[in-house]
Length: 353
Length: 276
Image (cartoon, rainbow over all chains, first blue to last red; front, side, top):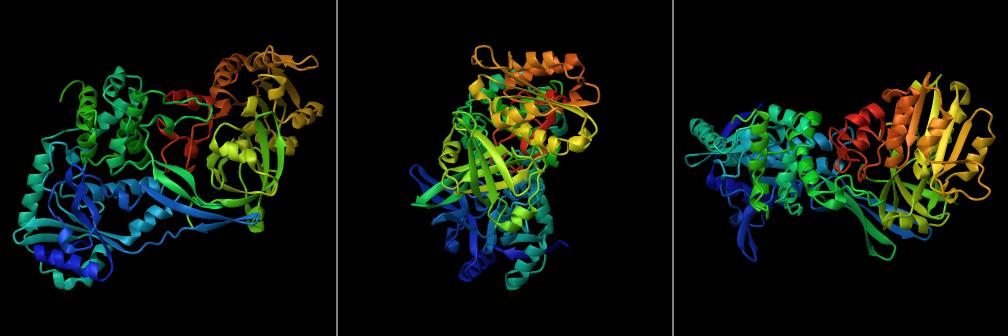
């Protein structure tokens, strides 16, 4: 079903402008001001010139647009001796993401598995269904990137509807899904005949080589080692640098744990929300009695690594990590997931690299 | 509408079990749901007080009793405090039933030994009534129940009913020092009394729920009596939020307690990392 086309840089911007003008929500990398300067984030683009393509990886992943940091799941109101519930809609207005990183698009497909595990999470899939993702192939990121070690590619197509790969004068466009086809058909004037395929292939190859140099893993061996070394002293030693702040989980495109809480919004009315949560905090597993099955930080660190590289793969056939490198970039303790998993890999492969 | 939307429940009855433990009897407000709702012994749900939040408990009533559910809880936190403040007629929420269940079909034609400590009797009580309501399908029924003190025994009215039945062998016990002058039951920890009751492992299943320390010391006693780990069932009580395998909270090693449990055999528990 995939077919190829070509789009120039200015036509990508014109496409974004058309979408914004038509009232469609466009999400794209853009600059966000912070007290310490600017950084790049995925953000709702109100104007085309806010969109930055082909820059560094946005500081946070696309997760925010599918599993928002806080999301109302129902509203309630007391009426005399009754309580009335107002369900929230799981139908969302269409949105188009332009310039997604391939790792971030792939993350969505990976998290789909748990969100559809026997119970279908309507809020997640409602947003998934409403979103068309135009991914921009990545030239290989920085030293913290390791997508190729977890089975992905800097020019990978997973989770994307359209993949753009830089070629002379614009982008070679690979149309991957029905949703992608629909979008391209609706804006056919912006797309030309396929060209630049060879350049795109070379770009992908170069990116792959660049990321490959950062980390090599044998995922099956890593999984086996993790399953058999729950009580290894390794966990105690690596956890010494961990503050338990959960920044890693916050920026992670695949960390999806959440909390459910009620908030009163007035007398006799309020909402129930689901908020991001993380296995890195002590209260995550604490029982009402005060007993905590994961009482120290090493057990919480271990849980995060195990869940990503052993538990999720066993259950869903996917590594719960895209190698985006964000957790390594934000860690205040200087912990580096590359270091952790490469050590595990080393131990798993009998000391050999 | 989404999977986190609860059923609306009406509080029909409030029963104080001990000074800090209470049972709520909840009826479905929607008659169609009351009619169609079914669950299996051992399954749990998310109970909520609007404005306070949700909390996870097993359904403590038997699936053989239709149209309502019961939950028993101890006041320890925000939601259980709010649950203690509700009056008869108040509206609560319930999502469920979730999780697996005790294998009643496998237990048919066999003897069942129930062992519980403290409020651990709640999930066991569900199975006890399920078995007693279908009494002719099972062989011997033995119940060993203990609490720290006489005042901490829950479901006292039902303990009296079970004690009066000829087709139930009931052993009640309190920890040494927890007895009252007129206490007629045993004095000793649950594992000791299980040894004294010495139920036969022949064609028998054991269901054990209670504080982790009680379970820990009861398993070797059952093993000595000849129960294999495959015939001993218990429940894990990990903290949960969603109940449907999404929120990640109850995951221990390869299992999600909400989806793969809460009911596990002793054999399954022994294979898990010690994170419960």
